[in-house]
Length: 101
Image 1 (cartoon, rainbow, N blue to C red):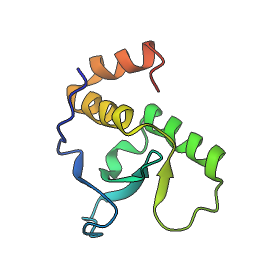
Image 2 (cartoon, rainbow, N blue to C red):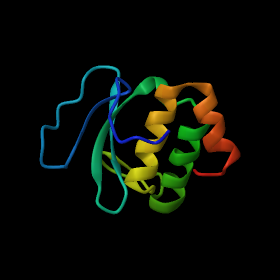
Image 3 (cartoon, rainbow, N blue to C red):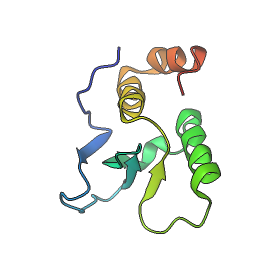
Image 4 (tube, one colour):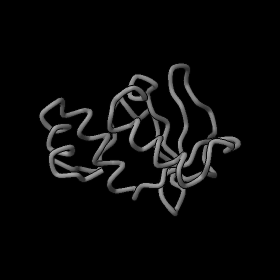
């Protein structure tokens, strides 16, 4: 279920030093200690799993973050989440039921 390919939900995933362009309808995030940059569709922001990540971000880094939001999540887990969004509701339920995020 958790492959590392990127989907249409993620327009790009690149190290910080790459292009900082963000297409309309997408938001950039830095994920994990390595601060890998992901550009994610805004359609995901209201999903409970993504809200959980945003809440963890607020707890760890506060609401006064400047610039790109940081997500305190291992990069591999974040990639699994994005893969689950691509896979549909069954894959998302698997993540929820196993408390992976």
